[in-house]
Image (tube, rainbow, N blue to C red; front, side, top):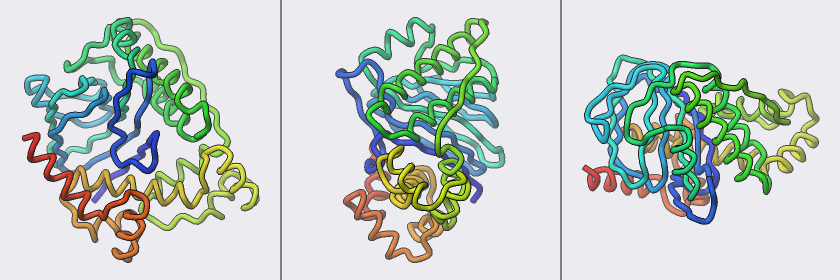
Length: 288
């Protein structure tokens, strides 16, 4: 199976990060970048906004956009509590960026940028928009007290850029910076294999002890914990999007021993992979 998935979650121990809030102006629940070569089907709804920006391939949205195709450079923003249903056919590689967000200020922001929900919009295929997503990802590399406000600010910049492209204006160029950005990207690029903390330290040209200290200061957890949670979140994505067995998924996220994978999954998420997968299937059928 050929799939690349970079997912960044506000709460690492939650499998969905599907929250709504009226206590914060804007809050980013999760965001990421995905590549699929096989068929993908989704039929569900969420409590938050769900924005998909298609970079490559095609995606057919059956509802709420009345069976229309997204092509590269197209996007759709699903409204909260709205049933959505989309399909990516087999045989066509699909690459897209996505973000889930909430907050009492989202409606105002979207209105000011003339971004409508539940409709296919065409800002166009622009590297600047991709860079804005990457900039948003970087917010989750520094898991300190500024995470929420930084992610909200960068989401705002992304939405504004999309709005400018839709209206025909020129978007601003992005900026990039982070202490451990290269090693974090390495983790997500090699999520299926064994990832040694010593190798991550070498990527950042740091000693092992210094890297561990910097990583914990930036992320709020150890490199090993972040690697584990990233693998588990990736496995949840596979359970939501594929029909692979638990054993196959365990191998794909780097655990050759399914029993060990089950123990780690339950330790962090409070239930076994089988129960999680069964619960997702039940919800899927209910939505249908």
